[in-house]
Amino acid sequence: MLIALTVATASSLNSNRDNILRHHEEQIKQDSARIQQIYDNTKRLPIQQRRAALGRILKELGSHDHAYWINTADGDTILPEKGNNQIEQQTLTTIRKAYTQPRPSSNWIADTSQLKQSLDERAKIESREYAVFNHRQLSYFASLWVAQDITEHIRFQQDLLNSSIITLLGCISLSLLTSSMLTRRIIQPLQQLSSAAATINTRSTDHLKLPTTTSSKEVGDLTTALNSLLARLESSLSQQRTFTHSVSHELRGPLMILNLCNRRLARELGESAANHRDTLKIQRRELVRMEHIVNDLLSMFKAGDAINQQALEPINVAALLDTTIESIRHASPHPIELNREASTTHESRAWWALGHQDQLEQVVVNLIGNAQKYSTHQQPIRVDLRARWNQLAISIEDRGIGISASDQEHIFEPFFRGSNTGGIEGTGLGLPVVKALVEAMGGSVQVWSEPLHGTRFTIVLQRHWPSPSGPLQGLAQGAIGNRR
Image 1 (cartoon, rainbow, N blue to C red):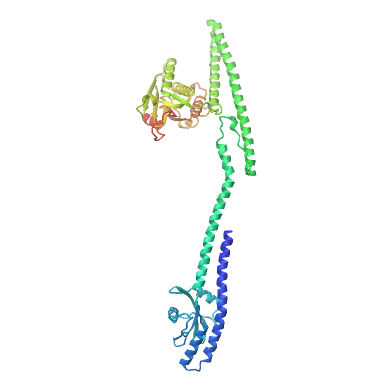
Image 2 (spheres, rainbow, N blue to C red):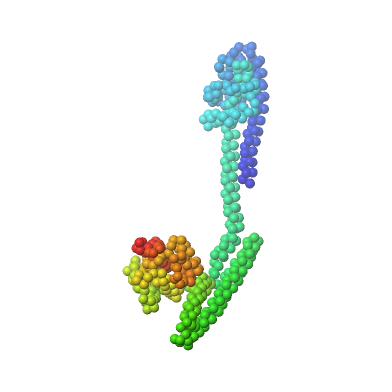
């Protein structure tokens, strides 16, 4: 539409100018023929009479919008006689001075292209505009000049151009507005679908469905396809949960019975069956190992089960660490050091974070257990509790065998064990369980380690009582900086 309007405007301007050119061209041709006749007929008259006769015909043929004058062979000019409805002689004199050099012409009569050129190269005298050109050679040395007043034509063209520009801008604005409305109307169902998809809550299977819409067939088909996909996903998740629960419970029951039977058999054999007792020890060790694997797998599943995940609750992390470390100290002689550092004077309120009590306790037990396992008994395990801004960090550091840089990329993968663990027993599930439990509480796990220098794991949680806003980083980095 805009292109058609632009083409129509340009065509209208060119057509209007061409019409004016054709109209004036015919009139000027007729007038120039009469002037040529008078010029030829007065050749034998005295100069003054000839000039008077030519002045009268120039006046007769001239009007308020055009005028003729003759440049003679001796460089003189014959202007039309003064009249009431004529272009003023002073104006013609000014125009003549501006055009002292005659324009070249290949024949005796100027063509339309020369008139077009005169329109393009017009002279402006005061508030009027004139097209000036050498129209006809009356003789070898004399030429007929025409001054055409094109002021009204120029104004008309300018008004038409301004109107076209305003119309064009209006059409562009209308097109943009219409396009915006149509785009919004087209995108609105997709936005509604996107918003509905964003509100899907995997914690409840009742919301694993998008609302259908009738505003667009394509969007309706897309919604139907997505709902079909969500239905299959919901069915798969349900089967996965059922299978995991069933396997966990089915395995834990026989394992518990086997463990009890193993202990009873060991008691009944007594001291006389030493060989049998060694076999039972090996059997019990493997049973305990299998039990740990099942428990770790179940913990990983629970941490990743967003549907049955409980809401986060405030935890007094300082009290939890005191209780957990005290229990570990009773079970193991490995020394453990606990340090606290808070960026607030409210000591009693500084150590609260959002999480799950049992899961955080399991995380601490797993990390301290790893630290004890991979370090000597003489080296103490350091536990740092730091609270800064809106975060709380628990760092557990040992001075054990460390983890190589290549192994650090895989330590959170299930069943992966470091290349330097050797004969140290382990299931390869402890750290994946830690990561899953921490992320389920909205936190993160960071690790720093150097072979033969030790390892530090830092758990970062969201504080329940945030301090004034500030950078939410540097807790783990600060601890690492202090270590180095």
